[in-house]
Length: 166
Image 1 (cartoon, rainbow, N blue to C red):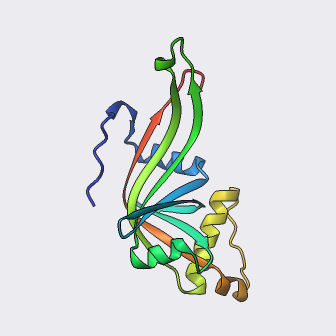
Image 2: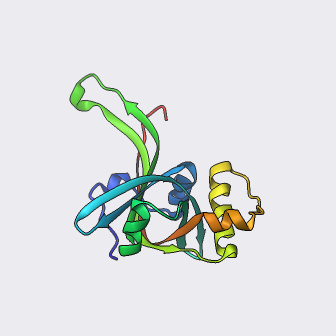
């Protein structure tokens, strides 16, 4: 997939370390998918790994539901994360603005099958959400009952706007 051309170059985040820093601060990912011609978006907690210039996002859920039905038919997805929100006030309503940091990307979902893959994905999710880099032990019955999947990100862009007291 071709990388998105950013209209507002003054807000574009080009440095990969800055992009990863944004990802690290955000805790909720909105995953967008399409069921035929019907869009569907859902907020999810996530974990991630950035290694060898490849970003991989990890998610978990039940094995059933609308999201899973759609992803099994069409694993092409878009994600969006954002954080560090702040209202930027002004003297006139039309001059108000909003500070933020965000990442948008495209890729595909792959369902993880083995206990080892699932454990790794869950560890990445736990690491990101808790800030603790621990290799957890998951009982086999729990691994069997949870659906773990990853997004292989093909392209992603970053954007930010800061306010003076940010």
